[in-house]
Length: 73
Image (tube, rainbow, N blue to C red; front, side, top):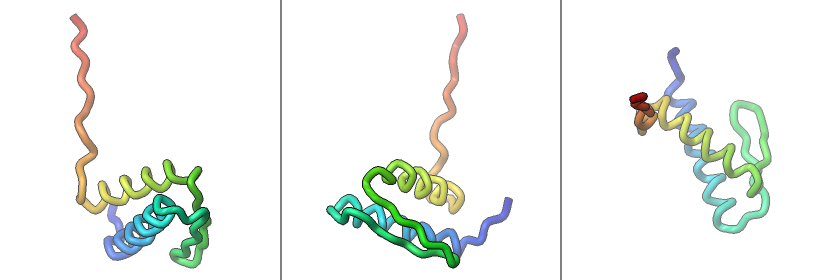
C-alpha cells in the first residue's frame, strides 16, 4: 500500500503538537487536517499515541517491534 508521505508527515507533526499541548496542560486541543476537525483531550491520549506510532511505522521512522515467538516444549 502506497502512502502520501508529505500528507503523513504533516499529520504526524500536527498530532505530535497536539500530544505535546495535552501533556503540557491544555485541557482540549482542536486540530484540522484535510478538511476535517477533531478535538482531543487527555482521555484521547492513547488514540493519539497509537496514531502517531502508526504514522511513524508507515514512514519508516520506527520498526513495528519484535515479533513474539513462543517455544512449546
